[in-house]
Length: 151
Picture: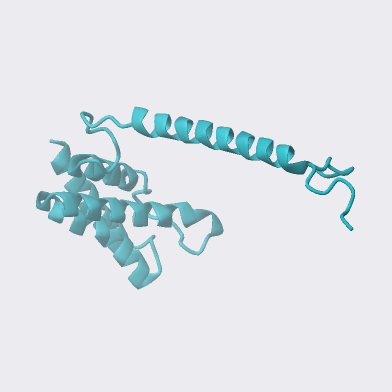
């Protein structure tokens, strides 16, 4: 004995979507993903300006200038490393050192700049103080090295 309606398409049950509902869901998801991929591709390719040296890290010069900008923002008389609100200063020192290292990697002429910019962070870590005469001297040397590349 065969079941009545065997081989006949079934209607979706209450709460179910059936095959056509699932196919529509996949179609909508595919269209959304294609639109998102198109927008991302547009943003990626429209922002690339290979003729500009103003893009951070694109050239050794832009990396060095960014490092010097950060070093110039560190207070000349130092700062209290134990104060909770001075972590941005520590971050500036680390970021400046990383950017100077990038500049050195991109062009060896910035090796001296890297050495000078790395020194204030190294002094502050070694002494766990950034309000000492040693720190102020190392920061002055870093700023002097930055002044030399600006000329």
